[in-house]
Length: 256
Figure 1: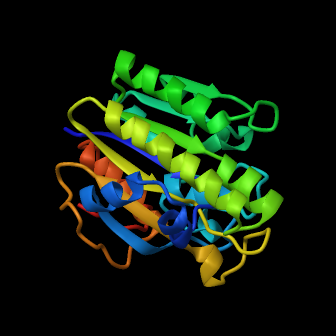
Figure 2: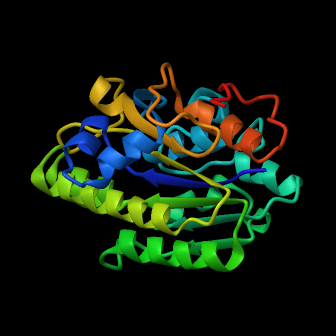
């Protein structure tokens, strides 16, 4: 069975990926099956998008419509909870506390959180910690969240500004470091939760809704252009790669 590392770059627009100037972008696209016109969910806000990614349903089903978590009225089993049920080792490395509710804490082998509002250069720090953990523990699934693109780049200075593109550049450098340090048998997914415009996001305009999805792994054709990809497709795809049944409520399709 495959193992999976999922890297999410908060607020990374597809054109931001293409224009960030990092040399790894070209290699990433050559080595991955990718869709630079994939869609996220509405409202295109960080926590609702993450809940949809990990629970495979739209926000009107899981009920999270803002960056404040509330318990689901009709709970849907999330990806990491489903993997745990089948004895897969899961880990989460995050820099934003609100993401702690993406799974039950006791369903994670390891959860590491450093606060991007308190510590500088959190993307690099959390990436280095994740790589050390992968080498030591070889988890079945690891989620790595990189938040500076959204916080320092988009909200502080504006999407597609020089500062924003610099933050995307740094995040792609982090993804390259993970790629170069992965043991054999891993698939790496690079994705965003949403895009952005001006200094905000959350609307249904293309700048907010379009996201890149890049998947590098033995089951994916290198350089292939995928179509009609959704953030909802990630949970069923990861489950299939790990040989775990999909949850019946999940609405997305398997990309493999």
